[in-house]
Image 1 (cartoon, each protein chain N blue to C red):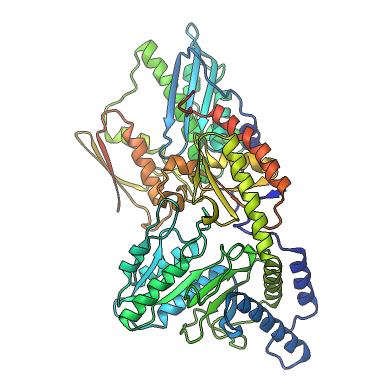
Image 2: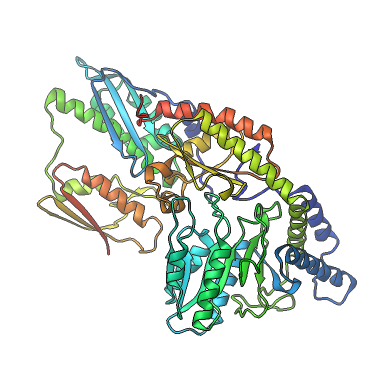
Length: 210
Length: 393
């Protein structure tokens, strides 16, 4: 079972586009965390009259596919309006790279999350649009759609691995169904906690494998 | 290509390949047959047994060839515990063993064996007090390794052997002691009596022999139950037709290993020190994983390059034709950081930027110097791209 990168991934890893920092950026956001793995920061310069992304740059503390997806999503976002750029999906980013190994799909999720967070921060600051939705089962489910099951690169909600979501005054308890000696169990639980913890209003997250 | 991933596997030495070719095309008979060619094949195996036995202080009949190092570990561990009848049996190893050992332990745990895993210090050395405290009348077997495959720690096998011998005497029964010597054979001399081992496993492909062949030392009188079954004409422990081509290659590899052992290890030591010094002088914000100097095998060097990720370093080196390995979670099939780095107290972030260089006797000074020249700008470039800044910037 070879894990292989496409020529396009290698090309973007080797010579990433839009790498760096925008001083005086209109918005920037960091996603991921060094404690768990990769981290990406996206910087945006936006033309306020047209809401078009004039410039976009990123930095990555990550692997080849993380750097490559950062490169491709900034390419995709450049020149687009913020609404258009916000609609870019991780699937689109992966497709532009000619595909990613399933185990690496989460890298494209991270890059797209970075871009979206930066756009949403801008919208909140300049337009007062608040994306911090109420803490409910729907919000948690939406967030869990960003957690991919590494062997297939499909999210755990679609794969029906999430069996229960309970919320009680900011304490979120999640039940998943994964084979107890599966090698991906621990890293997936870590990722669930990382994702759900960042939802506004969440005080604690517990994940149980049932 | 500059190949610095020699723990994973080594190049087959040209002399080894020639020895294998001759067996494949000329001495291909099954060793059991009373024919000239059959006798030739049997003698070939006996020669190989004798040679390895001589170098490790054993006798010919105490060596059996296996289908791999992993198979040798499986026969040693499963075979030894299944040959014993112990009430509530317990088995002991460490948390930093090679995956083969840990996988067999997991399987035995499912069968009801109680497994203990001794911890290590910050350099990966076994906690021998913990080992001593875990041995009791229920202990069936202990399995330890000679050199840690990730960080090169030379483990105190003889001291562990003494502790096991003392505990055995106390309980009035021999606690079997298996040593995984696969990653140590290239740089460490071995005497099975000095370390008081009952079982020692070896792998051919770590010493410029072919893949698909290993060996197991079984001290005379040690009871093992076979784990596979078939024709016993070669060995009841490893039934079926023996891989004479692989054994001939392994034998040649052993001969070459000891032809200039001290000279080769000395050269690797000089080169690994040259690489370490070069990295220390040219790259700031690094952490050495494993012990300094002579307490680390001459074949191994593992550094964490902070603020960047190891797979990215590995890939850039690969594009320059330099092959290394990393303990980063990103490069692991399981997306978990290397368990050995975690066991010696590294955090996720420190394991993230780890690179392991493993040398062989074929590594040259030019290989090391080229690696340094290529590595420095790769680290600088990835750091310039990283979200994490060194504290000074």
